[in-house]
Image 1: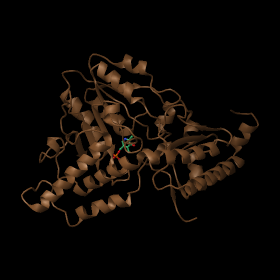
Image 2: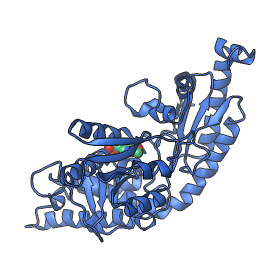
Image 3: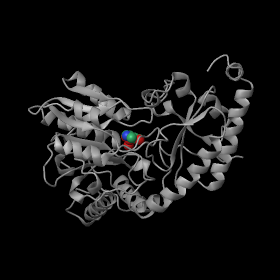
Image 4: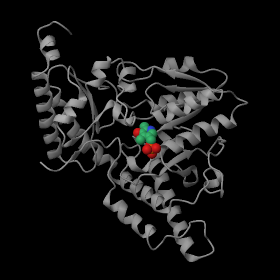
Length: 395
Ligand SMILES: *Cc1c(COP(=O)(O)O)cnc(C)c1O
């Protein structure tokens, strides 16, 4: 087998060839600056940005003027959280988030803590779920914002955002939602869960890297944000800098394709994941993390106790998988998400994330099942720890 079977779509997705095709003219012929409205070339670029903004808005059910293009979800998160912190000091400095959030949220809030913010980190249960009563209890008169994600990147666990949005409304606090993993993957619209701000990223939905979007509600209550970048006043003065027209066009096209295909694709991938989980779960001492909660249909996080995920990946080098730690580049620390769900350190190290995507076939999944099963079985066969476990000496 010479082909790499790519099952790490939560880390990044391949570029859809249709997206590349849509971008090409804006990397070549239509290279003009979208702010150069004095000539036709600039107006062509500007028109492409208008179309892309509508495509992204349509995907999430917002209006186009509520979409700000950024360099990705990380920048959108920084803009939202730092932007609110700067503007809402008179209301307070207290933020609420959850221990299983992406590092882009956790590290931004840790930065704000150094500048006077107070942050409450909600725990999760063994399934990765937040207790809504914990959230209610955490809200204070000086709470400004809660940052809670839609779907978790490591486990696929989906938070009940409708209920979270209702709580935020009732207590009059802002709700920022990191929807980077759910956007374009499962059908939802802003109307389903009225958040105030939300982010998504091009390279997580078959678009290019280096482009993302921040949704900021404009209806009903207006949200005040300080910009991170100052310069030419682009993006309604929220994000200065010459627009990345090819990236924006690519994100727009990716959003359009995702809107058309997400429903059918979600059920196709759910079937493939079902087969993967049912087969691999027949191995002894194997668990599926977060399986008791609603999850993204294409994501599976499994623990193969008493083996190291890193060793499984060495034994199955043609399958691109992630251990919980892979997201935090280079580190070998066990996943903060799995530890928060109560897994022992050894079990977190024994966990693999399978994230399926648009270009995976049923054959890919069969090969993956075969390779991973063989790897786990052979590692256990030669493992003294496994022999001890089998003999009952440890548990
Ligand atoms: C990938 C990811 C991010 C960061 O997105 P970038 O566009 O790469 O900056 C943030 N949050 C979640 C949940 C992610 O999966």
